[in-house]
Length: 378
Image (cartoon, rainbow, N blue to C red; front, side, top):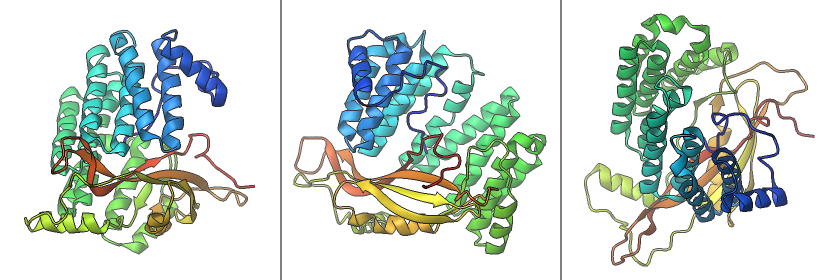
């Protein structure tokens, strides 16, 4: 999934830039007047848009980021990382808002900004190499995602970047596994593990996580339990998701999926009279040291939130990698945003482009880095 509002790659800055409440509004107003540097404008505008996004004001968040991009895109040559961060945040909000064209354009502009203005071996450029494949996944286009990841893998091997090539191969393993191609996933995994770089301790956790996901796909519960207890976390930022049940489709989405599978007439085409608001909830839950989840609950959302009952069940059945902790520590607390929305299109009988069609679900981790370490509830 594309990360939202990650500014670590920009550069260090004074801690009073990202603030809340009145100070944030004042800082944002100053940037609107174009008195900020590109770095400060990116940080403040993204923080302001994040507050709007968390409150469910997706359109306002998009407009905030659009304006910031308009103010700063001319600085791409001198400040490529702040400008690319604005494109990245705009892409994520557009994805949740259902505007897939804007999402695709923003991802492309982010990648181009970095490639055109930074050395090819810069970490930000290397990270962006996966953005195109991730974008295709966001558009539910597994074929183009596979092509993108394979291109990264081939380029990395040609450049002698074994670590990047292995990461790309593991993406392909995960994609094959998700598509039900267990034989293809196993073949790619064997190729990855045969490379010398697979013995690098820094990549051990990534390989272990992928092995667990393959085991989960085979429903090998004994192996999953054993590996969850023993997996390490060298270089890991926190518990990694191993397995989760599929999300329940809405009735309309299920009918349209069946129609597409059998190449029959779409029973629910988008029409000019459709009203398609966004529905969203924030769900908080604990990840216990054994990798199981506890106490999922809806923290807030757009009323009514009854539609999200199946999401609580989905979260409760997930399995994450295990980790060691003290007896007094309940584990890791996480908050995820779930957005149910249609996609932008021009419905039948209308000339106005807007959200319509079968609702799709987007998920985003909202947990702050300092909250994800070892949260405790008083």
